[in-house]
Image (cartoon, rainbow, N blue to C red):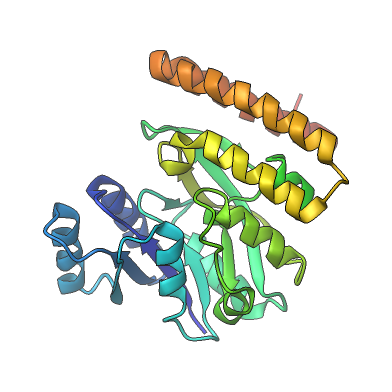
Length: 281
């Protein structure tokens, strides 16, 4: 049984190097697989250096059909008894012991997937705060983007991913959240309280917020039917206005946007600690 880290990368040397450095600082040796196109880019050249140094176990060719398709191709090449951790270019482990921690939990867990919390990072590389692990996974919270779990902080058994048929590639942004909801309907997953990854904004999910908003609306309608129909369309409209506002602020005043996010995360953390009776006066 291994935990295999799969990284999809295309034309992102900076992001690949960030993930590489995080891999190399781990206290346990990481089983690392890359998915990347075969081309003449500087990213591909760096991948060849990683192979030569023995840092990467395997490189799988990406045929350019999208990130979720690349992730599907990759996990199907892994042993059914292994666990899969998708940590794409630019993502990091939360600490030098994150991989060892997950390897230990996976070796003992009766569940078929594991989830934890994550640090949120800005596009400029600044850590803004912690997004804590929810007490239990909730499909409603996930698809309304409240107390959500990030795919960077989820680890799946390969055979469970195969059973779920991987990511639905008709979704460009929200296929990972769709997968988490489908997984939770079969197996409740194992929650760990630790922060295990760092997710930096600035990627396609950040740039294409409105596509993600539309896809989440579609998923809510699919999974919940009429149960939250009015609330769902209200939330879609609110997020549409909010996303446009946030993107405007990010373009003109990125430091202000990051300060606001940092304050919000601190307030959420304080509220959580207060509820748990751990607030330090």
